[in-house]
Amino acid sequence: MISNGEEWLTVREAAELSGYNPESITRLIRDGKIQARKVSIVWLVDRESLLAYLGKVQTLGEKRGRKPEN
Image (cartoon, rainbow, N blue to C red):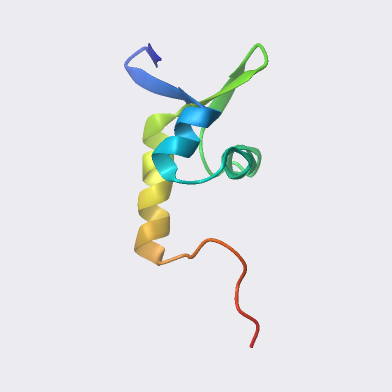
């Protein structure tokens, strides 16, 4: 969905684009790490915000999942 020059994705579309699961996308929204807005009962994720977050994570080398114990 494109609105005012911005592209908005459903949580499912954002999950497919990022490789994350939908619950992780929802957590990123809740934690304020990606921009989203709720329309009725559906969360829409700002595509540019998601891509910026993914680029940042890749640059930092953050790995998904549990961290190894020392």
